[in-house]
Image 1 (cartoon, rainbow, N blue to C red):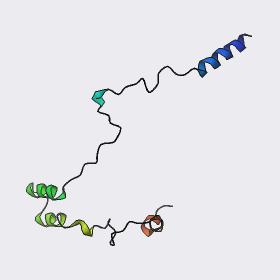
Image 2: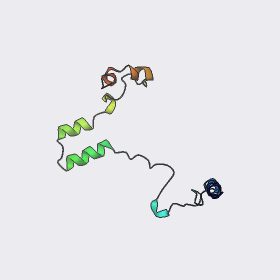
Image 3: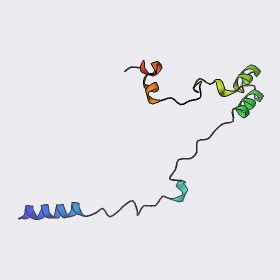
Image 4: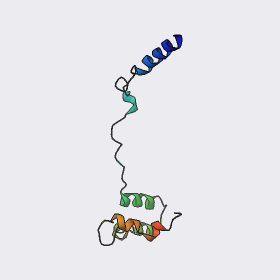
Length: 99
């Protein structure tokens, strides 16, 4: 009888909702939390290169290379179109990994 009563009390205790819930908790304003992540910061390449040249950290030749048009970047497809998943899967650089 005593065991049945303890099991019944245990089941009732487990079936009751938890007193504290997420609705009751508030985020303090000093946390500066927003539901979205902050925007990714961008850097002006020309301004950065100019600053590095002024500080003597790069040579004028390096400055001219950095400030050239970024159209020849290897990360951009040469024909200006996006890659398909099949092309990515068949990419020999990606497929030569440790798989």
